[in-house]
Length: 214
Image: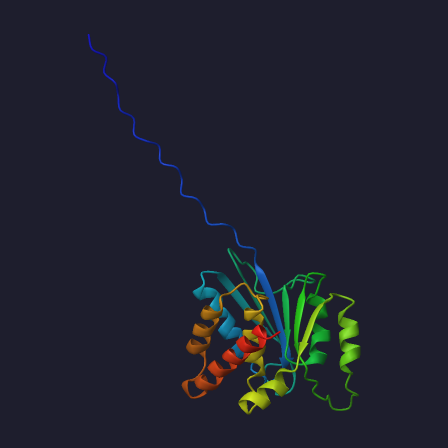
């Protein structure tokens, strides 16, 4: 009598789950009219294009030109809240130096600051000196870089208005943000109005050149 051998189907192994991505937290601070919402839109597009779950928030003074503006973006595998928690920012991008002090609430020892060397006078108040601002920020983190973005953009591009794009692009080239430069460039092209696109692409290229020479 022959024994019947049943053929068993090979057990399929479950597909490997993609590696969990730590949520990355960015706070951008500045004043009304500096284009923070545009920077937020560019970052959101870039992070989504790269496959991240992304949430953003816009806070404070958005309707007042020259008033304080603060925007948050968080991206990663799974993001629940759009707000960056106390002491948990990975990067604080400062378009105005005095505003960076207000963002110190979000800074911890591992937080990096990338700051535009720009101090806007506040009516009725004596502006703080750069040295005093940096000294205060060092109470929270030692990772502080100040760049004369306004001056550089004025000299190389004829206008300081793109200093925010310059700083954002520089942060990507310096690997301060876990996004690919090409992804950021595509997001700029998707976000910026056609009549300003050439200037913004040149700003992106200027940031690349600056990062390579530092």
